[in-house]
Image 1 (cartoon, helix red, strand yellow):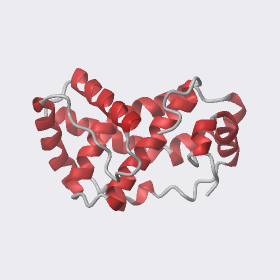
Image 2: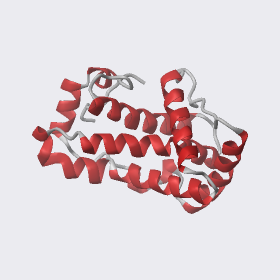
Image 3: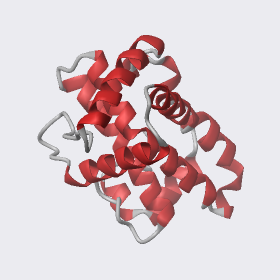
Image 4: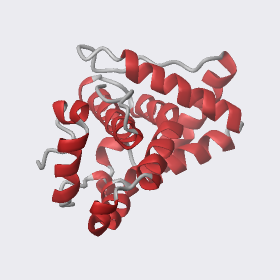
Length: 184
């Protein structure tokens, strides 16, 4: 995913968020995975999503103040709320904060190494114990939460944030090259 290592931390946070949403969405649409497998991907990504959204909020550009609420609450918020539920599912299955941090590190490594020709991002839990926790949590998460591709709260296309789109296109060139910041 372009932009993960951008010099601007705001841009790199956007790259983690958008790369994650893209990776999970593509895996769900074209990867021939079961719903529980998509849930496992969400669990593996959850810590990275939360950190990325925090990074975006904490470094919000002053010139975009008018769109801050629309972006953080309406555009990104639904993904953050899902990630929070995923973290809760991991904790309920026995994951510690260190475990969750390790899963986040694995996810970021997978985003960096992602093969765009493969619809399913290749990521594995770093230990068998964590793989078991992810498996258990994914089973519960899959039952408790609307599947990613069918969650109506994730349909955020109607959220219009033209100043943010323009800012991303102008200030985050790696992201702009992959379409982030384009008004679609």
